[in-house]
Length: 129
Image 1 (tube, helix red, strand yellow):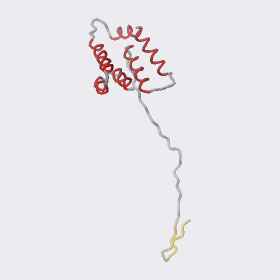
Image 2 (cartoon, one colour; image 1 turned 180 degrees about the vertical axis):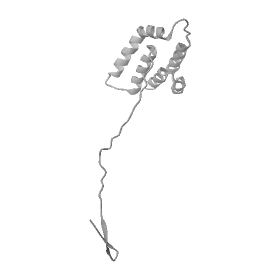
Image 3 (cartoon, one colour; image 1 turned 90 degrees about the horizontal axis):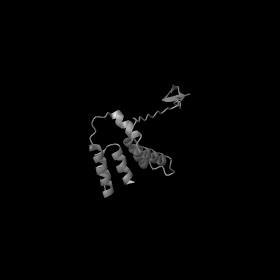
Image 4 (cartoon, helix red, strand yellow; image 1 turned 30 degrees about the vertical axis):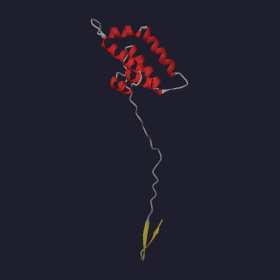
């Protein structure tokens, strides 16, 4: 479970969060690999060219398959699914779509309005209808 959280943080590029979650040597190795992957300089090629190449790579296809398997599993572990999705986006050179969650609440119950008319009858008494 914690490994999936570290992978999810790395997939989104949040190295500070990943380092805060890291406990085992495996976690630190994952962080080191991710950081080393960012440091590789690329010169003479455009971002679109690199994305097109990475999208056709074996690693991208494996990441897509891993995400498909994880998303369709019976277990439905949200952290694992998100980690696989972010890894797929990262490996394939795709940017994650912006997710906007709107919540609309419609109150269709009419307010209970009851009109009461009271008339003073004298002597401090009232009659209400």
